[in-house]
Length: 253
Image (cartoon, rainbow, N blue to C red; front, side, top):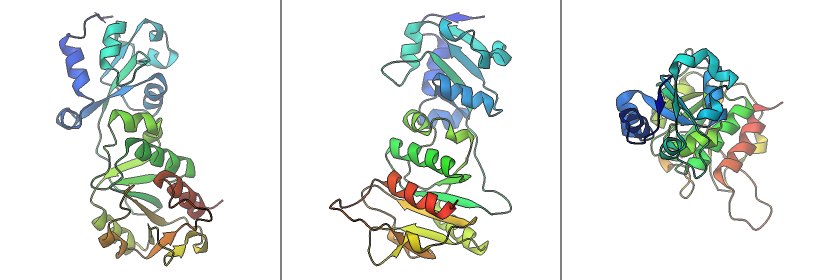
């Protein structure tokens, strides 16, 4: 097994670049960090290009089928590769795959309209996974699904749901042509209370930008726009919290 002790090693320099969107797209791969996330990736059936691990992880049971992919690294290399203050010491270079919409078009969809905060984006994907929603659409202006902070916040849910990056307007129209109702969300008491919508196996739910909400152009294209009544003095809910409330209601029992 190869051992790399210096952050200046060419392979390590290349791996480090795979935390940046441009380099990820050029290479068709990205760097995943952390034991849980690497285990989730391997359990999903994806094959890593490389695994970098400090000594403490070399005997990890999940890594054994991929022994030929493992390179041992020093703690200083782990610190260099890591995006966190306390590196776990295990990384995998994984394929960055472009997902497509399901064909035929059916099921439940979460659409993200310019959600910029990586923590919110990751939480939204994780919550969709928990609610049983199988497809999440990343619209323009939404944080990159393969950015380190989004990957950490998703906690492996990206391996359980289909993530598609696309402009939302064509997606909305495609869903509607397939007979799937599309719901927008807005902070407007004139919109329809989410409680008045019956749970369904078919729907699309759009949630909008943290500060500005949904694009007004998209709001005009939905079948119905939903509102969460607020009883107290808070002006609004965090987008991930609001989406969770609506997703679990729309999915039903």
